Image (tube, rainbow over the protein chains, first blue to last red):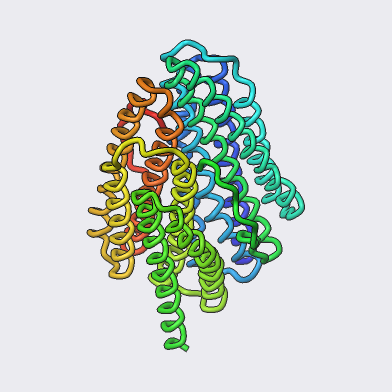
Length: 226
Length: 226
């Protein structure tokens, strides 16, 4: 009995990691399509979305069955609860990768506005955050989760910087407005991927330490666009 | 024993509904502050956010304790799992209401661009979706959940319509760009509230019928901005 349960937990973890690596590859490929201005590259992302959606339902179903049939205690219960939450974050990350592709499709109807520098940087940070959050999950490593979630500020700052820069383009030349808007939306898609990776990190910390760090009392945020 | 468990389930439901009504009021007040151009009104939303954050952690904690200590079966298990998911949707809805306030604070630095018509309509639909999704949850009503989630298309269409209209403003008069961007972001905040209410509906259908309707095979979406 015990050994079957352990095996089921391992399968749950493996399926989640498979979904995580799909989501990561979707971010990478979406950004490649954007940077290389090659619409055909994006097809892979749309194909992966279907697999991610199937995994989303499969993983939830596995987790619910484990809760119902095995009535897990303590550590195992927290692992399964974390899996359900991380599953939902990964699905939303994949959705954001799809949104990047859709925004890129609109963008590619127009000539290049400017060489992309900050957006690929954001994509790199977002991918690394996702990768590290999953590594923290697998290795039950709350320290890695903690350092990873601090990376999120970098994404927020880059997003604001991109916004300000594109605003000046739009104001000085209205023919750039549509393209600039697409890029602003893409930077927000990447920022949201960082938010979801942050949620994964918080779930890992709760899973390992039973500590809920999600809402520290913090100073009010200065007004900026959200 | 049985009676204590039932009482605990009732408390869980009541706390969730309290959080839901807070989230609803946050959308209403944020929109009021926007429409009446009155920054002081927004304060209430920032205050409510703290209570929502506390509830978010409290409800998760209650649900985890019920899973651990009561080892619930079938219907009760699905109810608790749905509570955990709906809890997270409500917290994100409240976040979006806060984002509307932050975007409004920036918007109010500029004179009125145009009387708002479609955004208040979106806010009304989003509030009603949230209200009905919670009613479907309380009454275990999958039919209401099903009709409610269909409302989401209206929000998507209004968001696209707002985008197109504001784009023409921006292109014809660059002095409107900042304000138009704020309004575009607010319309997206409202659209995301609709997405979260849709997720609540899907959770209700799963809770009552054990059917996962989240990823039907659907025709590919036409390119539009996401």
